[in-house]
Image (cartoon, rainbow, N blue to C red):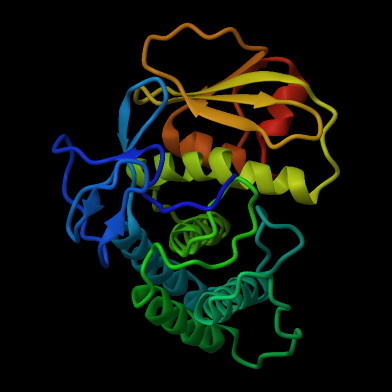
Length: 294
């Protein structure tokens, strides 16, 4: 996929949704429209329906919320406690993983590199929670001062090489790890529908392609529908061996022939695609398995 602005070929503006504050002016390359700060951004699918996209400031807000909840849990739990959703990690290892992930993102976005960077060598950290706090503050400062349309390397062949990919990625990485921590500590804090919905879109639209690029290519061919039961959002995912999966949103009410169908509430689909809960589906089991990131 060619590099493009976060508001490029398939992005549009509309008064039909709430406003989102963007950090700076963005540019719609196809029609030449300049999207000024504060404009709401919507994505226009090929089939014609319009759906809200979180946008940079909402991703940062989600990161703030999820990181706060994550830190509240890991501060209170024994670091040797196991995290069942991330075997064989303990809370201490989960905390270090999140801290190192954020450290890597900060370094990469700060550099503006168009090539992947070597991560820092693994070292023993005497205070994982303190290390986490430092990395949360650092990545928040870096991403908060980085426009979403700044060029930077991204790891998915289906994603533009632009910084907003990382604004989105840290929000969802933190949301997922926060869920892991709450689940392990037997506490509860449900995901909001809009965050879960955007997470499903990220998982299918960009991360699935990254999985195919890194892992051994799946010898699976066919089409799946992923359907939100608590809304009208539906994605069509087409698998061809050796190719990046083709992902498109489907217009509500449209009839699409598929080999498999997965469904559930947005929050359930979000967690199911990441292997945290069962993926409810019917049809070709190989295609359903190919939808999962883990």
